[in-house]
Length: 75
Image (cartoon, rainbow, N blue to C red; front, side, top):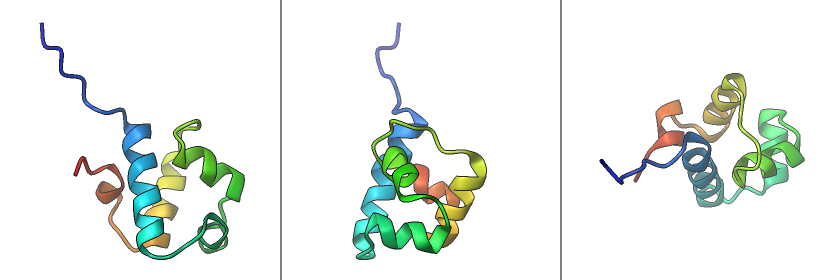
């Protein structure tokens, strides 16, 4: 039996969203205004306490200037 368990999509999204946001010098409020996603929702997605809907993922990718796949990258 294989004991390797890949990271969950919500965890990958949370980690990459925070990293990309911080790399761009954006606060959660800045990203909220750019994406029209409520700041509390963004915070929940960034901590993986909420799962993002596909349309939110798409808006986040556009707002950060990346491809959707970048939000789920493992490295």
